[in-house]
Image (cartoon, rainbow, N blue to C red; front, side, top):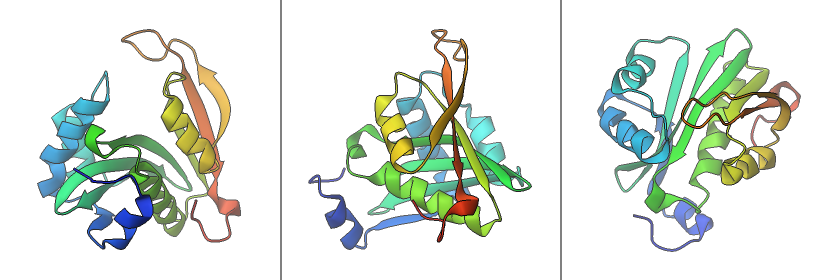
Length: 168
């Protein structure tokens, strides 16, 4: 658990690391997935992205050797879709999601990605705020996308091909 609300303090402790996920992170990613989402991905789906899907990238935020968040994307040619971004409840509100998103955008740019897209629930105001702050814009909606409550999905897009350095 992170003590204090100062994201700069977290960055400068040198205890926070954002890195590519490894097989040993699977259980922690799955735990965060179930904690954060009404319709979580199965362990098998996460494991497939981690170990078998060559189009998938998963990154984790690790603080004091504990996975506290993760982000994933699927890349096809010069486009990528962010699949999930989640931070454990105990670690929210400290900029971890922004850091994960920034690092993923850098990684996507390094892979030659020009366009990043994602889907988000309109009720997820905190996520929308993070995405807008990172330069994503709403481009459309998918009506009744989420099966558990019929909520729409907002489709957001960021053109990272125009970024000077690929960071948000």
